[in-house]
Structure formats: C-alpha cells, structure tokens
Amino acid sequence: MASHPPQQCCTVGVRHEGTPTGKMIKIGNIETYVATPEGTTVGTILFLTDVLGHSFPNAQLMADQFAANKYLTVMPDLFDGSPIPLNRPPDFDMGAFRAKHEVANQLPKIAAVHEYMRKEMGVKKMGAVGYCWGGKYVAKGLNAADKEGGGLYAAGFTAHPSFISEEELSGIQGPLSIAAAETDAIFPPDKRHTSEAILKETGQHYQINLFSGVQHGFAVRADLSSPAAKFAKEQAFYQAIQWFDHHLKE
Image 1 (cartoon, one colour):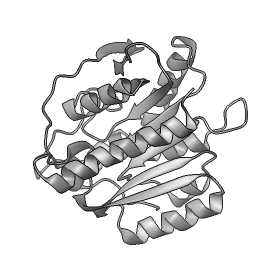
Image 2 (cartoon, one colour; image 1 turned 90 degrees about the vertical axis):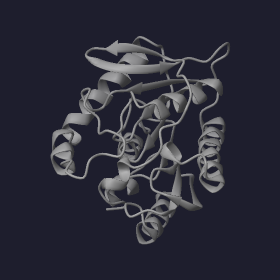
Image 3 (tube, helix red, strand yellow; image 1 turned 180 degrees about the horizontal axis):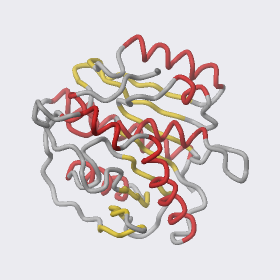
C-alpha cells in the first residue's frame, strides 16, 4: 500500500462555521452537492469526500470556495446517506463501514456522476479532488482510460490520502498533487517516501507538500483556532487551486 486504510483519525476534527451556498441535486438516486461559480467558469472539479461525506458543512464550504475560484464543483454522496459522524464513538465499527462501501460499491456511483457531468452538464474535461477516503478514487480515476486514451481526469489533487495501493499510484496517467501532514498514521513518512519514488517513475507531473504541526485530516477538519493548523489548511487549499489553474483552467 502507498497509504494505509482509514482509521479513527479519519473522523476526528473540528466543525467549521459558515453557511454553505451550493445546492443539492439528485443524480439518479445519488444526492449531490453542487457549487456553481458566479459569472465565468474556468473548469470543473469532482470533489470526492472523506468518510464524513457530502453533507458535512466543512466539505460544503470547501466546495463553495472552489466555486469562488471559478470552478464548478460537484460533490456526490458516496455513502448512501450514512457517512461516519464527526468524532465518531469509540465502538463504531470501521471494518463494517469499509466492507459496506468497498470499491465495488463506490465505482458505480462515481461512474454515474461522471456520466451525468459529461452528458447533462456538458463537461468535457474535469479535475478531481479527494480527501482521505476520496484520495483512492482520484488515483483510480487517473488510471482509467477514456476514449482519448488518457486518464479520466485532467489532473488530480489529494490531501492525506488513505488506502491507495502502490499499483494504483504507479499507474496514474496524469498529474497528481498531494498535501501531506507531518503526523499521519495513514500516510506516514515511509509511505510518503515510497509514494515519492513511485511518482518519480511514472514520468507524470507530481507534487508533494508536507505541512508541519498538523495531523491527518487537517485540510478538511483543522482546528482553525490554531495558527499552524489554519495556515496549513489554507495553504493546502491554495495548493489545489494553483494545481488546477495550471493543469485544468480553460
């Protein structure tokens, strides 16, 4: 594995203040949060969440910020309306959750959203962001061959990714940016260094930024009362925007 499977740290964090401004739509039976830019749109992003899901306010506020930077942002429910709650109870069965939402469950949902974005929204090129759980599906999407023979996404970004296999990472066919935490049991230094070596061998454009003083989940659930955590969260978001401005902006 290039990163370990999700653990309890995947649900620990702080709920942020603010009022989301996007809207919910249905893509088949998949509830989906859509954040639409005012005026010009420069690109489209598929937002693949962590285990707290698409209804978590922090994720919705982040989708709104991508839209504020002129990216149409589509964030589907990956967990059938049953994400893990913030700061989950100690007796929560993470193994059962992972089994219920295994790859075979996730990929059809993501494929349905892709189809809707292309046919109903007219999207010809998209980027993908994935936080923790969602990072695996950014990597898988960069592997998937489309009709032009390239990756499904024009570019990908992930922060503190979980359970990406070495094979998935070595098979990417497009640019990938990673934001990593100094303290992360899921993406620890040995996994990060392995990932660096794998990415170098792919020949693809890649970036790995390491942020000190923060833990797994910081890009979504940071304690904003901590200056170090607030800085890291904001810089990881800017990292994503700059990556997409370079690789995706039209």
